[in-house]
Image (cartoon, rainbow, N blue to C red; front, side):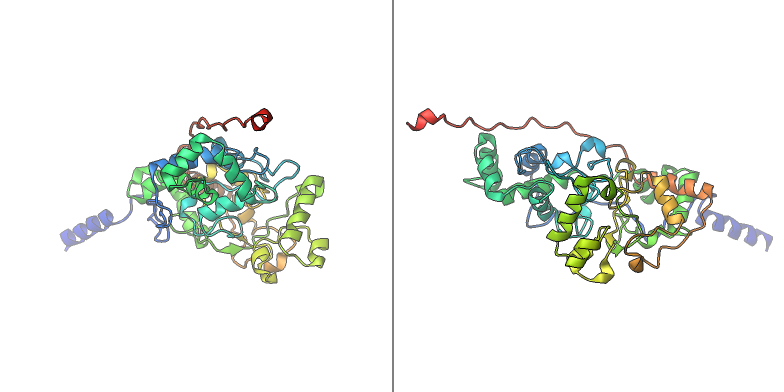
Length: 375
């Protein structure tokens, strides 16, 4: 009897996680290959064209705002400032989101206004406070660049560069900027040594007491739903006249009522798309991947560090103008100082090495004929 009991104890020990090791939560998973839409298949030539166009200001109203101006590789492929840049004479009104792993999203922008990267690229290039470009103007510019005429003909069969194909190429390039080899991914694939004891404790908190997994789940650590967390309004709207002008422009352009236009002091978020009062102040849950490099955080950059983010949730979120819509899921967590440190340690495992690339040499426009040539 004693021998049988000893055998059972040994078998149980072998089947259980090692001391200090957390089980791998069923709601989380490593990140696999990026999905590629059948309407825009990848090719090396298309990706290379997209890389050129991503860094080329030719696709912007003033010939000075490439995609890379708001998605800097050495700033997390975003902007390490609360609010992103805008077209000269303006500023943006929201925080710039990283393009790293953007291929996995089913909706883009903070309010999910674009359903794919192709549409996102077009919206950014034509946006009133960002790219401010017109399709026909940008196509004409591309046509004056011999290398672009050659590349568009080779990749798309265009006699004349089609600007919609430019957005296809940019999207193809962006789908190559992914990170699937983080310590978290290695751990979820079975490498017990990929996370240390503190990081494993943080994972347990993430999936348990802290409740992060209720919204940050799956391989991308986001359910892509919309919530009002009580994030305070962007303080620049009280201090920066240019930011105030841009904010009022957005309220007007996105169809606010006159009362809202005159009285609103905060970003209505998803309301801009649905016009439902219950959606005021709601924003899409972002992925937590690559967040080591994408500070500051939230839709308006009002939380500077990951420690600030954890403390924000630990306090039960905040208060903003649309407090009536604040999610019931946001409640005080009661985390100790050590638990908060453990949670931050885990969050850092969701980022690997910084993704940096060398900017390409851009093709040049052929010189225009002199007026004398027409005499």
